[in-house]
Image (cartoon, rainbow, N blue to C red; front, side, top):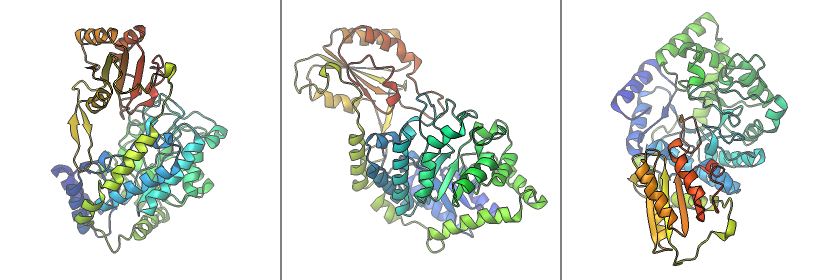
Length: 485
């Protein structure tokens, strides 16, 4: 839910009239969200299981809190202890807010470099690395009293399609799936993960019928995850409002099929009333048996009991002030970010360049937003908006008094591009800070087409160049003409 009046009123009605078992936190302010969650808990006969997608921290969904680097940055440190500590810190902030289940870690192995939806959300492309990081993140999360959720079973890393937009296919055979995709999920089960999220994927190597998404497939949910892997924890679908499901199934049909497949929690059906009606009808006719329903209800109630929700449902606002966004967590985020920095190439020893070197340096900041602004988090404050590269250029200026700066976005006109190229021609060193992030539902991880002609012309000038990628390491390939990345 979002803490807006209309959405919250709808949720109150669902709690009172439909007696739903849980809610997912989507956006709002930390304190406002906590107060609304406390109120919902008082309205519910049975404690609500509150979940959230906090892969990189509380600020993913609410204002305030500690923003942590993406999973791929943690993977780049090659240090599982960081994954443990980040998982624990996020869980502490989540629990202080009133969230009991984090839809993290991403256990996908991102073997497809143009994957438009997983990419930097994964710990990496090496199965062994991902397994170790997943294990550590889960243990850290659950040590702080929050249920970890390994996702997106059976593996969303080798797709070129975003399941928010369509139904992807993972075309690998069973042998390959066992050696790559499934390994991190086995590691998650071995680590004692309390929940697993099923992705919306066609995986013929596991379900040869090729007829239904993995989230609706008994062969995958019950056959592979529960029987083969021996997993007996909570099983939750990915959001049911995604095109990977809605393209071919109605809200009622998909909800019934998911439960019949072995799912315990149907997440975010696009029409709750249709889902309730279909589930009720299926239960009355015996299409979904009483024993099947009891199996899921027992698991959900056991999770709530294990979380201590029978004795303490509400969160303490004073705990929010003490835990959410505290100095310890900010220091951890900085430490991990610094440890994640990776020098991909460094021809002609272009970096580091000596302080106060009498060179003419031009910094051309590249951004994927035409308004030239981005959200930035600072310790102890809510997110603020500033120009991309402003802080970075200030640091570069400390090393060179002869620094000229320019900004380009996909909407920059020919005059702006020519002005930037003119500055590069006069420079002894070109620095390209690239603030082009991977955005869910964009369908791509590539450089925006509007910036590509400029980059081709800049490469042809043969000025020594340093590229600094902020958030999208997959651009290192297209920018490999630079001397240092």
